[in-house]
Length: 230
Image (tube, rainbow, N blue to C red; front, side, top):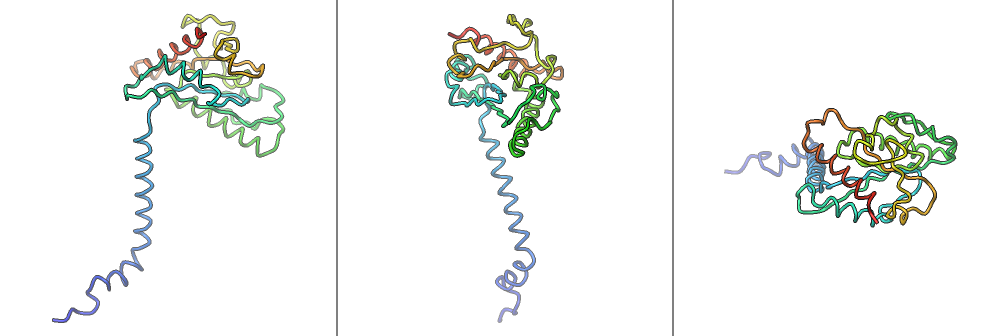
């Protein structure tokens, strides 16, 4: 018997699927592809054993801090047990022009003010980077040890940090330790800008969190190791 016209697959594909469902299928495939790639990237991304967060209006590049990174890697080791030693530097460098008053950097953790008198593009970029830094500071509980220059230490009030004396660290400033004269930093810095290490304040919500406690103790150990480095 001859097949009835219009009942074949090619007829359905041409007259039903293509005009009515093709575009939705393409959109669906694209969405699934994006989700797959994002999930793959997240799953394959290595979790760092330790993160040092750097915030400075001067240029500090990770490639200039290889000695410091090696020192931290030696102290940290494979802290998360994944078979690889990975130390991450999160570096925030606002592009700020015409800075008039360093108090402009001190609006607290939610401060997003535009800074200085430079070109509008530079100012907006600087503000965006500071907002990203604020988000990291408040949300990333695993980021504990911070390196600031003498402008960025005004970004947050002192009570956002731990008192160094509680960790047996003597310092002229109760929460910031000036590191310029420490040998490893003296070999990094080529300017007279003051740089300071500090420990982000203890999170009360994490006081019984074993992983957070281990991360905090590790940060304190790294701090001590840096101070004692030759």
